Image (cartoon, rainbow, N blue to C red):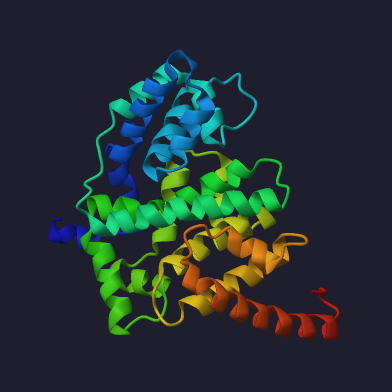
Length: 298
């Protein structure tokens, strides 16, 4: 990367991304080929949507293309992968996928963020279903796209997230957002939101990406945090993940810790018992405080 790009602000990076093709994961093309071979003409939009929900860059390409092609006669937003495929049609989706450049799979930083996005979407889908959400896939899509800024920088300006990592590891920054600001003057979430607005992604998706304006937005944020903490192997990761579970428990009626942990599909078995104990302790202490102060019962 050119050294002068290190001085770019969030707006300059967002404008730069406007004119660059988004790469997709190679496995998405392989999955598409496998589905075509197995199902032929019976290939369903639902099967293709499941492929999209495993590839954040493909999901982003799809939503951008659906927005670009949207008819003014449509009186609703296209907020899920399935809706976008139905809008474009299977043939157009196939062309979109097969014509896409592929991610450089030697880029370990990008692969780590992509893995985190996939796990966040899986957690969000499971937990949103537990809330009896009217459209759980909307929450899953937002969780999948929550790391868009991180992903784009790893593709086109890897020195920036690398510098943010050094700020964190050195102790010069205590939290990821602080490390990112020290590295480049903005947070990667700010970049995500600005790109979403510039690309005119559905207003609902942008609201969920903000993570603060509704219970569904909060669940998007918590799912993204949980995915990051699940993949973290530091000494404090179980405490951070336990706090995520406590937050989720407040949003999902009648959710037990066992059920919430069940939604963390990639959590190693050896971490589960310890995580339960830490989260149970947090819930118990919060429950005592809440009942005493008349806030909420546990």
